[in-house]
Image (cartoon, rainbow, N blue to C red):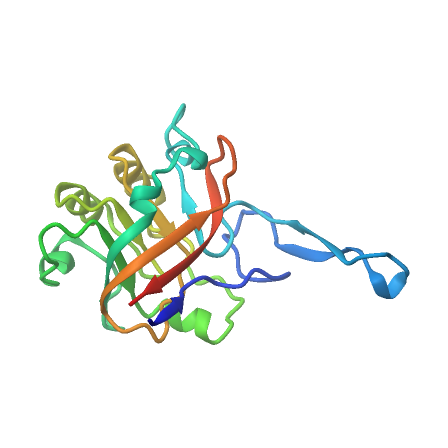
Length: 210
């Protein structure tokens, strides 16, 4: 069995959304300083690295990450490759991908994954993401989970519309994937977010099996 870890490591100083809290991972108890055990502490936003969004992220009164359906987070998934010259995921782009009918979990590998592959700590505003018309396309075609290889499913300049279209329809955004080196095609996705009660997002470990 092939196992592809498509999660990004979490570490101090890693790239983050500009107005989100920085990531700080450090030892709170250290055996080298006389402690009986090593114990670390983590401070970060819940939309750090590889993570999922919950409806309450953009929908007032929406459900939190602890309610997300495991039947959606685990199951057959399709990885599609977009060439480096694709700047935006639009409805027209999706029409040209020949995505099989019935696809419920769709992961996009774009030029974004090269940022993760080289350990880039710079936030890039021009990352490839899902435009609102593509979000509507995904909902209308029955996609239940959409995965992207940067920190947001939505473009930097159009974050609210894309998120609201997807979350209002019950589509789970899986963000911050590292798909570098993953060939396009069919896989089994296993994505397990931290069970944060009532929260708007949660870090996740995601793998592809084949």
